[in-house]
Length: 83
Image (cartoon, rainbow, N blue to C red):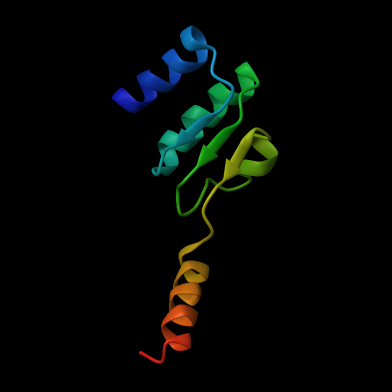
């Protein structure tokens, strides 16, 4: 809950240009709603964002790909070194 309070403070008091973080879908949804209202982009590090998030929150950007793509990248690195 303190992360959400911090996000509110950053948007309302500090007047930040962007919010980074949040790994839980419910946190992402809450902060994305705040970001839309305040016109502040939100970068999410969650594995998945809520359904239709790009339509509901145009200021929400998913910073990390899904886990399948992450594991494929790790497998490719391991494969190049023939581990």
